[in-house]
Structures are given as structure tokens and as C-alpha cells.
Image 1 (cartoon, rainbow, N blue to C red):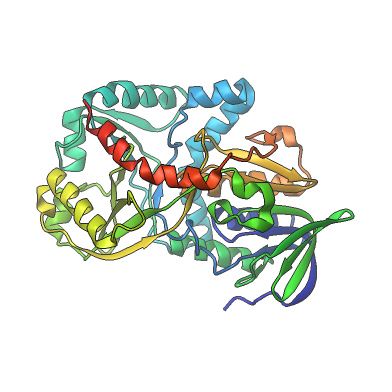
Image 2 (tube, rainbow, N blue to C red; image 1 turned 60 degrees about the horizontal axis):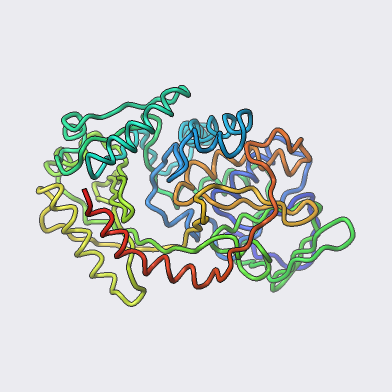
Length: 411
């Protein structure tokens, strides 16, 4: 049982948020600079937010920017450095799990992105395969017949795959990172939400309901759960709430015919189709609700019907569990490393790729928090750019789902 922060304490570094970003950063801080005092403040429990309640896919790419886009945006040197970090992010995550001995149902069987139309196969799959292959990634192009063999379905039109990807139990992974960080001297306080953040001289004071922390450097690792105390950070993203669904355990005959290799799968649709198996034979999938008033059961029926069309053995699929969490979408779909004040930092923009990306950023954020050279960072430090009418933007994203589905239906 993790303690609640009570009374005033001091630290060299304070991290707000015990998700993948905060925990990986704290862990690597403790390993690289054991003489520093690191405190992590979590409003609930480790992994409570999107880190512990996502689909569990470990994907070594971003959702929209491809390698050439990143290099064009960040410049040749830093751009290729960040591309290499993304390329290796899944391998880094699975290696960390093995090194720490975290029991989180980790399966490094690869990740497949099927194309939902011939046009997407030519325009998206081939391009991504070519760009990642040129940079040494372990990828393969899957022509339609080969993809059908890998998936057990002819519902898609080819695709590409990253062999270093896979999937895991995200909540178990977050808890494992928390245990490893605490074992290395990190002070982790649960049920200790930050209610105030102010600059005092050369340090920051973080207030909680029953205590406070004085720290020289601060990392806000709160992502979509950023609130008023985080200032401008809370207005730099659009919150989005996808739903995850897990079926009852399915028979071995079904598992042998639906993605028999055990890869994680997420396709090229704007209204994403995704799935993976758990070690106990549950199929994990999900989707987004067009309106918050739609019932969860309706989504389950819709997802079950869509999966059954692609995989006839899944006819009559029922979901036993459902859960949701908020993720942070950046308007440009790029990640951003932010300087919010003197030695006050944050990053935002995993855009649904947080398992691998946030974990792999941990050592780099740790270096920043120990006073490392900013020029060595894989992303430049930026000032926050608040989104005008951010609350309205969140509503518009949900309302746009029918439009996205119409786009997906076009040839």
C-alpha cells in the first residue's frame, strides 16, 4: 500500500503523475543519479489513467507523422535521432520488462497495421514500410495474400508489420514500473493530487491536500489528466475517450484461426479497428462512442458485429469487460516537449502510442531533470501553445466520428 503525502518534504526532482512517463522517468533517474531525491505524486494509484487502461499494444511508430515528416519538422540531426527513438521504442520497452522481471503478460509477437482499402495500402502501407525500412527498422510489407494468412481474414487489402512490436497488460506493466522505481529509492505517494503549483525563489512548491513538496526541478507527466494546477499545459491538447472491450475466454479453435501468430493489430481507419489476444484467451478490442449518451452495450454490439464480419469464427462474440480512459490528442498529432517555466517541464502528444513512446522517453526526460544538455534531447523544448476553445474542440472530435466513418467507407 503506497503512502499518502503528509506534511512538507523536499526533493531534488518532483514528478507529477505515475503513468508510463512519470514512472519510467523516475526509474531511470534513480538508476542514473542515485544521489538525487526523486518524489512522484499520483492523484490516484499508479496506472490509474490512460497508462493502465489502454489497449496494451506496444507499437514502434506514431499515429500520423512518418519518419520523413519528423525529419522535415525537427531537422536532419534531431529528426533522425527522434525517429531512431520511436523505431526502437517497442524493443526498449520489452527489454526493460525483461531486465526488471515485470510480470505483465508481455508478448513480443509483432504489430500489424492492415490497410482497409487498396488506396490505403498503396499510399500508407508502402510508404511507411519504405521509410522505416530505410532507417533500419525490422519491418515487412504484407501483400494481401500474405496478410490474409497472418490475420486469418481477407477483410483487409494488404498492410505492413513491425516485428519488434507486441502487446502487454498495461496496468500490470505500470504497477511493475512503480515497484521497480520504489525499490531503487524513489518516493512514490498515491492519493496525493497536486492542488497548487507555484514558484518560490529557485524552487517549486507543489501543494497536495495534506502535504507539500519543495523541488528544484519538476516534470508534469499528467497528459490528458492535466488540470488547472498545470496551467497552460491543460489547454495544449484535446481529450478523447476511447473504450476498450475484453471478451470471455475463447476456445483454442478460435484462437488458431484469428490472428494465430498473436500479433497486435490496428488498422488504417480513422474509426480504428484494433484487437489483440490476452494470455488467457480473451480478445481485447474496442472503439469510440460518437456521443457520450450512447450506451456501452451498443458499442459492444457494434464492435462484435464488425469483428465477426472480418472473422466469421467470432460470430456471436460477447464482451465480458469494458473500460475507458482519456487520452491526449495534439492538433498536429506530433509529440511536444514543453518548457512551462524555469526547470518546469512536460511532454504531450503520444496520441494513442504511449506504451512504447512514453516508456522510451523516460531516460531522456531523466537526463533533462539532472541538468543535461538540452541539445541532446530527441525533441526540442517548446513553449506551450494553448488551443483556442479547447473544450469545444473536444466536443467536435466526438461529433466528427460519423464523418470519419464515412471517410473510411470510401474506396
